[in-house]
Length: 363
Image 1 (tube, one colour):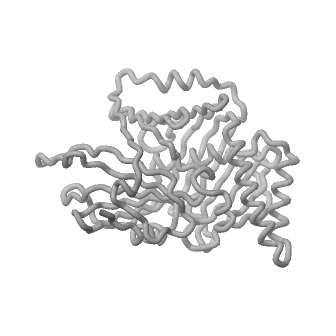
Image 2: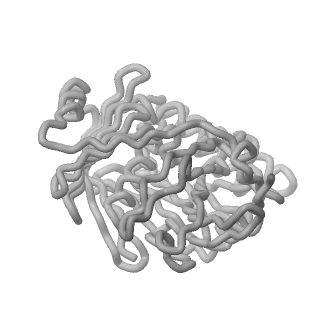
Image 3: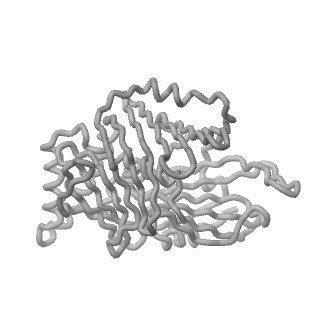
């Protein structure tokens, strides 16, 4: 499966939160790097404790600073399969408000605008604008989605070297997963400011399965949020399609996860009404809806989409991959009928299998 425009958007949003440390003093960044280096190299029992402190402290700092930098740049996502996609991004922060424009440079034309959790995607070929709210943007690091203390139990960090990316001198930090349920990461952060300019997702054998990087970058460019807001509001000539989401709980929808998948905590549960089925007069059952149950380990996320099974609507069971993102589909049989599960996450396929096997129907 090739890397799609949504994959570019996901990766761009990843770097949006990785734009970390940019407003922090160089001395603070050096302190974080020294903490990581000390934690990874110190002998004896103290090594693990120092490494744990380093990873949590570094990620917390990255998360808090990421909302304070303006930038424009070209962004490239590539997978181990050789697939590649690119986009140009504009990012503006004004107080607590973040604006973003993502223009696909490869594949079908697509422009995505974001104002905080309000997202609009313009599809020129079909003259459609898709409007939705995304409370969880699948950003890295998603520290709000899981307790910070758990991150150090699941990952360890170490400073592995220096490099140069997009004209910036960068320090390279490696986040290694402590089990086989999650991928690891290598992160390039600009040495003086801490700005993250490159991200690799690696498997258990340290092989790169997806890479996201700026090929060209301007910091603090003269762009205004008003200009992006005006472009976002220009829907004349487009059909606007709104996705209505409603907060719910897995328990109220009749689902549970038993046992829990190690390290992953539930962070949201939403539902949306299902559209009528196309063809042969098919239609969705009254009040039929899809549930989206999302989990995070603090870095990686998994979403479980559950809907009533339809012999005409669903395809065969399968596991698919696009870069670091795996998708698994399964039919679930239980009391009261059958359901169709679509599990999606930036995790190894065995993690999605674990979620599927733990998902149970409750009366």
